[in-house]
Image 1 (tube, helix red, strand yellow):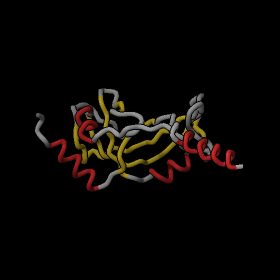
Image 2 (cartoon, one colour):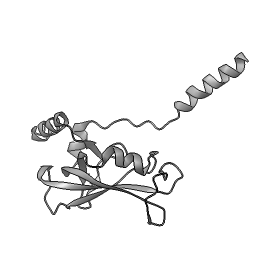
Image 3 (tube, one colour):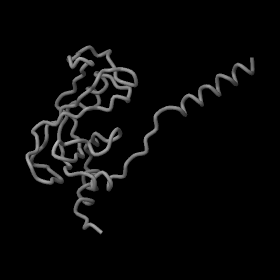
Image 4 (tube, helix red, strand yellow):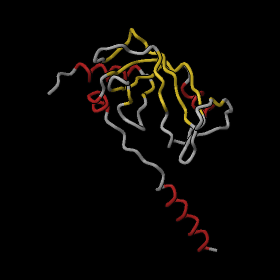
Length: 156
């Protein structure tokens, strides 16, 4: 009996150590790699299957081996552009959520719908600077102040 308990304990701790771990990218690195640092509001969250058909059933998920894709539709606040390299900024940015995260439509809607976010993008196609951990940061005044301070710092 003790061997079975020990086996279960070892199995539990070894399997949790195999979970995906991602080292967060420092904020200054996100900013320096960005052509655009934009503030927006998540106006919609949609899930599409592998054929590109929108699915509205809340039980569908994303994750390894699952061919569904979640998107957040972020309305850009054109009065609050923190960094730009010029060019036309879209009114709405379609942010694809990394497919390897275990996410579901209802959870994403509950967590993000109506929330202000800061997004870090590069290039003329407005691609995310750092995947998978930073599609965006949830808008918080203290984070915004830190970002503004880092953007205003002279380059060394």
